[in-house]
Amino acid sequence: MKWLWLLVAVIVGAIAGAGWLLDPGFLLVRYGNLVLETSIAIAAFILVVGLWVSIWVVQLLRRGLRSTTRLADWQHSKAMLAQHELQKKALLATLGGDWEQSFKALRTEDQTLGDSSEAQQRRFIHTALAAHTAHARGDFAERDRVLRASEDAILQLPTLGSLLVAQWYLESGDIKNASKPLHQVLAVNKKSARAWSMLASVHIASEDWGEAEKCWSMLKKLGQPYYTGVRLHAFDFQRQDVFSNPIAADSLMLAKLLARRAGALKEYKELAPAQRRNIAFLIAWSRELGVSQRGSEGAAVLAAALDEAWDSWVFSQWSELVLAAPENGLERASGWAKDRTQDAHIQEVLGLLASHTEQWGKAKDYFEAALKILPEKAHAKVRLYRQLGIVWKALGDDHRALQYFSQAEALATH
Image (cartoon, rainbow, N blue to C red; front, side):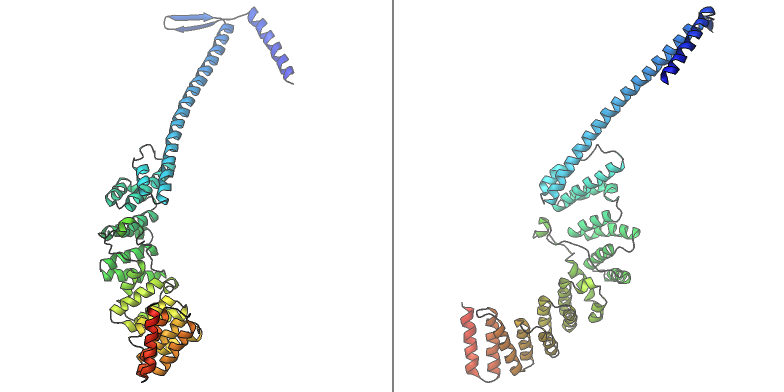
């Protein structure tokens, strides 16, 4: 088919060429004093050549511009690759806890990044790593300088960024500056349990109990647990003798607040499940109640926790509190012992409770039951021998009492 079109073009060209030879015509172009006269054929030829040259020049310019763009892209990519390598080194050093190496990798500020979304994302990573490294090294002035220099970068995530900054302030004991980012979070998300919890810790450390109560009431209203995620002894600077942090462990902060409230057992039942299973918090709460001369309430809280889930540490703390008022403790511990007949610790506590209420016969049975459960040379038998000596002395048998005291001394010296 194309050969047919080519033949038609040749025939048409021949006819046109013959016509131009018979009557070439002319073209007159006048511009001012300049006059140009030529035939139509030559004018057409000049027009075609001019168009071809124009197209060639445009293509040449495009190639030049494309080469320049490629060079710029290559230079930009090279700079971006260098930044990626820098951040990779810093990230690995940070994850490995090598703060000095991380600081060296991030010491030079990134001046090559533009305003693209990718650049902003990398700037956020760079800033977060640099600030965290300075924080972990205990260089709080450098951390704050990085935050001030790149505030928009670190806070581009309005919730997570602010919480991270507040976390750093809490870990470094700077409770005054921790409030601002937390209020920024709550301005965006009033249901942020983490922000309310951290803010409550700030108020507790400041002994602003009214504001702390408001935070706790909001958490209860939202049905959210209290937690801040404050890490103790996570960094070397926190282990220094000169370092003092008014923000203690999460459990201790909540314990300080709840120990001021009336109705500890009622408060326990209204806690979120995560709190009722938090052993460290329960122990801290009971101890705070003991300091406030409300040891019986602390014992009741721990007993309720033991009814839900058994824990030997909680039981030990409960026994310390209940021995101050052992009347009801013996019955409670007896109920737990029914399902734990091979637990020597429970038998020993039962014996102590019976001794405190001068039920010497029961005390003897409990101590002897604990002795049978323990291995032959268990060091805990020293305490049991001494307690049996006290029991037999109370029962009026000084000879047996002396035997048990002697056995305790003999085992203690081995």
